[in-house]
Length: 335
Ligand code: 3HC
Image (cartoon, rainbow, N blue to C red; front, side):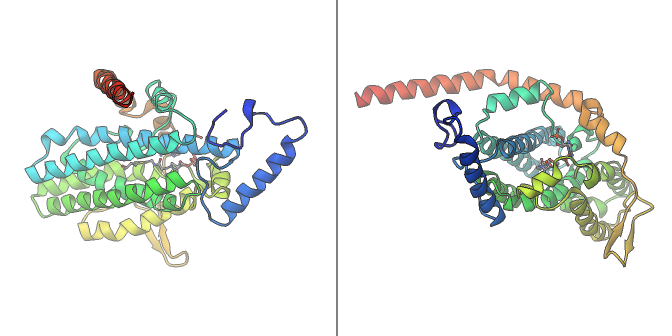
């Protein structure tokens, strides 16, 4: 039987009595690699729970990238200039590419792309809460770049050091591109803030609507994050949800000052003793409502995604038919 690991005997079961010894040795080897900050590769032995956790996280991440194309995709035809349109087209296309690297990384763990899509389209799989909010004005596109991509980078830089090789390597390129996404958003907002009073008000309104959902995007507080302890033990997660949220707030406050907008939190203030900002309470009930499918745009996002999948069936069929023909031609020539 060929799985990710050629060490797995046929039938998946070793002779009676051998399993605990073999597993203990393999587990010790796995732990040693993780403890030494090494990389686990697809054919290496890994605990089933590690594999499951990675498939969960990487597939959720991939889904977030491709669902994340939708709120901004809505604005491609309404971008205010050719320059902005070209940038937005490139950004949305990048997000599609990120989804593809990540689906490929998850496939190396033995889960097929069809299984992952089925989970997304049937509503079983999660994707980031943040993409269930509407993009009401052009300023939302800038704010998504600045804050949403900014938060994504904060969360994803540590993933470049993830213990699973294919995920870590995919994240290096993703982070480089996300950094461009963050900058283009901030630059678009800087331009609007040099414009009319209406444009400035539009930016402030978008920041007011996105700020709290962006803070929630880092995930539940550490004491309510069931996957964190084990994820960190395995070197999948390097920095906790709360620590990343804090780093994000501290990095964003000076950027907001340069931009000339106010962050919508009366409790936001520098705390000298902790060397970071204090900030107000996040509405976790709202976060869980969105995660559980009841946010402002969950149904619309899923319906758009399913429609795109159904509408694209002929492309997949044509590509497969072409590949089959090519294969037959090659075989004929080789015969
Ligand atoms: N949206 C939806 N679900 C979320 C969430 C969010 N913002 N934050 C946490 N959750 C879910 C978790 O998936 C988990 O549910 P599950 O057990 O059913 O899978 C549950 O809430 C508890 O959370 P934990 O903190 O215990 O979960 P994790 O340890 O997995 O941490 C995470 C959550 C920080 C999101 C982590 O999975 C992670 O770092 N994932 C990779 C990065 C990622 O997926 N980012 C999404 C945004 S991508 C993006 O923004 C694209 C860009 O182009 C802008």
